[in-house]
Amino acid sequence: MKHLLSIESLSSVEILEILDATAGMKSTRGRHAAHPLRHQCWAIMFSKSSTRTRVSFEVGIRELGGDPMFLSSNDIQLGRGEPIKDTARVMGRMLHGAVIRTFAQKDVEEFAQYSGIPTINALTDEEHPCQILADLFTIREKRGSLDDLKVCFIGDGECNVPRSWIWAAAKLGFELRIAAPPQYQPPADLLARAGGKIAVTTGLKDAADGADVLYTDVWVSMGREDEAAYRIAQLGSYQIDDDLVAAAKPGALVMHCLPAYRGKEITDATLEAHADTIFQQAENRLHTQKAILSLLTA
Image (cartoon, rainbow, N blue to C red; front, top):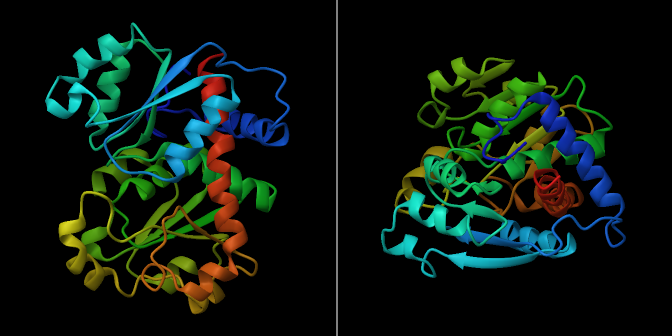
């Protein structure tokens, strides 16, 4: 594995390798035998704001012996229109790796192509691979395995998080159900390309029936703020609450990639009842990303 650009680009073997490495990183935190990023400097280049992703990558790079360098789009020439390939060819001569959070997937892929250094997609409009890898690890950690898994995603089924869930389900063979209004369902060509056991519906209770995991994300993704009022009106009923949890399998996990807007995509009471899982999920971003960093420098 040379880069981590998308779940789509990973094989099932690589996904499971990352999950296994994550378990090792978590169990040995604070006493790692090896520091694979020692004497390395990694750029963290973000065009979008972040809490969990930025903190977990900065801490992770340091804990593996490296030095992180945070660069916003205002700090470098990208913010003034320099082509990605030119920035990449400069960065590749000075840095050891890059973590990029931006809008277009093609920008991350072009950076990886021209820089020649390990490149990690920390979120684009198309995919959020590090999040879903951490989610898979959390599910396996809480549930014991990914066998016979049924995941139900509720809300905006067209954004980057469900897109990465689609590819994860296709690669690992578990069942994914997406409950969303018609205009917020994933594109038919994406579903056809991915294959797998993926069902899309407008019915919340049908999607949640017998599910092992109920999962949601914000209704208004970054860059869609001008659509906020319309999206809230259209997605208003696509909420995880105690009634929906009751429709899932007894003991089902409730997950949210955060930040959460309580009273919108999830009720305050439901989030608090499942806070242990949701914040364990957030913590696991650190361990998963350390596993990815380690594997990219092996």
